[in-house]
Image 1 (cartoon, rainbow, N blue to C red):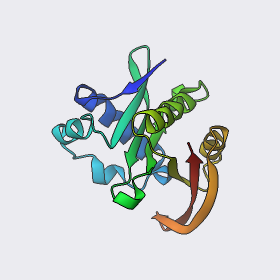
Image 2 (cartoon, rainbow, N blue to C red):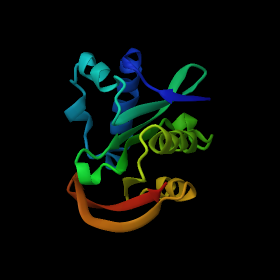
Image 3 (cartoon, rainbow, N blue to C red):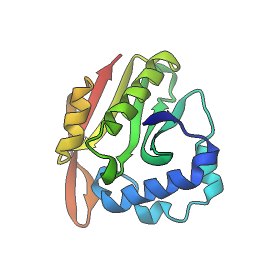
Image 4 (cartoon, one colour):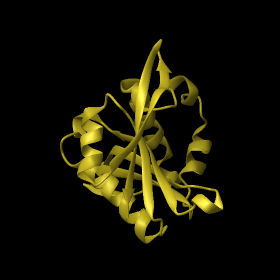
Length: 166
């Protein structure tokens, strides 16, 4: 397995995997497949351009993209010591192989070393036990819960907010 920053060259495979995640696990994302399916590939390529305040990482197995995660620094000056994880998804056929852990560790290392942030936050659907266990295994701790964070198909979903101090 190789974990690295994605570039504009990965736009098509990134978008395909992201759309797959939005379809297969809609309660894991604030965005929806309907909102993203028509995004032009040029816009995706621009999102994947290297930036000082964030990155999108991919995990590759046999040269195939099987996992993705985003990392973004907070934009306000007084909050810039923090970054947040977003868009985490691992294809079902690559789960339980250490892909998620490798992706998150890569993002945490980048946050600490390249971005020099002090903490990384994330939000996770309160019903996603596997993701919560993964985050806890990497030192994330819950610090709050937002009731009714998301309304999906008429059902409210809670979100657990977690932090990892670097």
